[in-house]
Image (tube, rainbow, N blue to C red; front, top):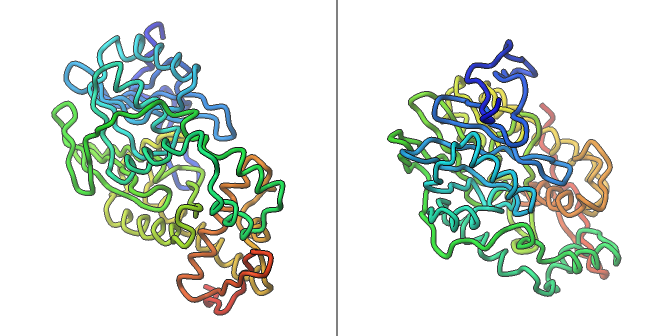
Length: 363
């Protein structure tokens, strides 16, 4: 449409796929928005990577809009926002910028938008502090601890050198963040446009990821916590090599099964809005449980972290995703280690070898 706004009601029948219902036939085009409810706009920004988009949302907030997530700080991202602000958002001001978590595709343009509109940034504390920490690393020399970490995972010399040269890239796609923020935490209720949104926190994908749930009509701004077709990356990183993010992730999903009624409409950061949250939460949990079983079978013989990729991932792991694949493999290995199901031995070359010590019964 000329104003960049799609109609409120889907113009075709809802689509059913794998137990989920997708109310809209297609996502919004660049510079356009879908009206999810009379006060919520769904928009999409392109990203130059395998995961080629992020969904962002605007909720009417008095005489302006509260924005949820922002996209990467790239020239194309700023151009997209200029079109959205002038078109479907009607030239009205941004009242606040709410970021579900600190990954660059979610906070990249938060600082730019906050400065432009003198709007506050709203985040959970751990997400804000972690983002500021990573921004401080931008342009710094890679710490040797990181090289030790990736060598232990089985990376060769060239791959470790690639880690060194690629270190500190966070700030290349994240605008300077505000030096202060408004904190949200589990159980808080944010009033946006006179309506309450309950904060529901998840862990594992990031430290303190916030979902927002408007209980009055069952709309959930899900961020990366509940995606319809892919599972969010759950990784161990050099900053906390013995962490158990997969335990945190699975615990959060189990808790959310007790929180969200099945009829809610989930507005995710990637993919399309959907209904069927209980089936999706169960599917995410089941996927990791199945992967852990495959991993246990693989670990009947000693393996490095890089040797278990085929047990966890359906396609080959190339250079562009090796860091995330390694982090996710270590998350599964650490999960088993924390539960006494594997052992870890570091050899004279600084490489860790993982071996199954106790396998859970097949179910």
